Image 1 (cartoon, helix red, strand yellow):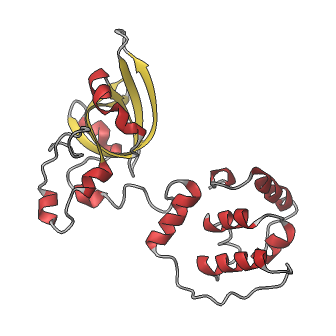
Image 2 (image 1 turned 90 degrees about the vertical axis):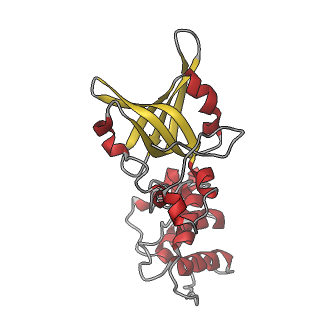
Image 3 (image 1 turned 180 degrees about the horizontal axis):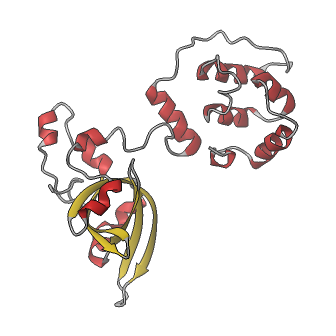
Length: 248
């Protein structure tokens, strides 16, 4: 990940790092702090983004964070600090939380990964979309970007880009679907959708028929009732009904 992807990292800090690195790579965390002047907030932003891991390969995240904090809080900089902290690695949840705080999204696994087992056998993969031309399928996706436009009759419609763990896919919401589901894109990012696969000049798109919040759907499922989850009946999402979807 580039420095620009790290949230809350000041531009002047990035410039300082890049300028000093022209003189040679940093050999250790101590070497970095002797050469680069930065405040504790930026130091912790770099730490939580994993930027110092390769400089201290024998230390875990907690040890590195402790050393960085002590370096900035001690009275005399330059003294070597030995962190007396447990060497337990971060849990999966802790690692993902730091990634989301640093970048706005997880980088060690796809945002959909922890939800897909709920829908095993119920959804198709983006990489396989060409196999279902002319068919209506269910997909899971992370919202990427959107563009609102209008039809010849001046009715609002929308082009939306989603991504699953296999590929990016393009969707169209014509006026009816846009009116019913368009606002959902303003406050959700993970979706289950149903639509027809269309092909034109070798380009595949999904014409959206139904759109639902994936997280709301998962929240209404009882994880103890595995059989019910596999046989669940998926209903339509609207503002007045629970999030849901349709059986294929």
